Length: 411
Ligand code: ADP
Ligand code: ASP
Ligand code: MG
View (cartoon, rainbow, N blue to C red):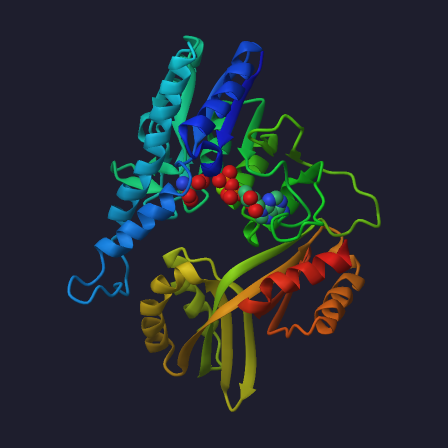
């Protein structure tokens, strides 16, 4: 008898018919003698709809223009957390109708405690006792993904795609044997199979490589979920919610043949580039800039500093388009603090990254990538590398083509 956490994503529970199909999987596991905890996302595109509702509700009542700062993040979390609440109740009802005992819980009810960073909160602790008691009583436990509560009792959410993280955190807290991530693809591929039909399914992938792919934009797994999985060594199995086949196992070490240095290629489609021109070229300037940004919790990437001469430098970095409303008001403060320079924002970039543990020792990966892009007529705006990845920034319009070119040459 094992303890299994099963997570079902939005498209897998988009309507009652689909919820029933997921419920059958849950019941199969239960009937096989396992304890089952289920984590669900909001139905279909519910969360997108709620985001749009928030945008409308907080727009200028006269002109209808969206407000620069966007809605209050506390209220946004209050709103977004309702999506998952619908699914847990519906799932429990479907399980009841199939003759099984099931009980639904919100994040707060299972003590999913987070910090107070609304809309991108980090999990601090999970209270396993209540879930354990229900499992011992023979019930299927159904938990709302994506949501938590602060010590002060405020409702938070974990960032888009965060139900994966709920599932892995619950699996870690319960010391589950496996965390199954059921989704609308049958595993982790060498790249997004919807954009590149030639993508190949991976049987296994290491936490490190999956973390890098997820952080760089592969949305099949939320990156925090992979972080949790690695830290608590939770085996994660990514599989198709309505097909029986084995999916992809995310585990510690994955043996690899020498020639397979690249694990996958990732596209991040909506990036903005911030450029700080004519900033003083003196010690502490970069520290001030990035300390300020770090406080906000915004993920900043692809940082480049170039010294232009005459005691001035240019610093540039990229952020997700979704973070631009947070960044804009901060830039004035930052420019004031560093005493000089000018900030500008360009939107409409995409990033293509090749990921793999062997990349550093194989310079050929970089040259193959650049050659394929050049031959395809794609201009590279920026290049960044690390031990296990190479990223290029291109125009957003070239993103999918660049992904196909790079995947084509590396696989
Ligand atoms: P869910 O709602 O189940 O959480 P998501 O839409 O968040 O599902 O994630 C699944 C999607 O991730 C797939 O439909 C696929 O388009 C995308 N994806 C991106 N990169 C990959 C990859 N390397 N392997 C598999 N799927 C990927
Ligand atoms: N419902 C949330 C979202 O759409 C969380 C998730 O699906 O993982 O982002
Ligand atoms: Mg997801």
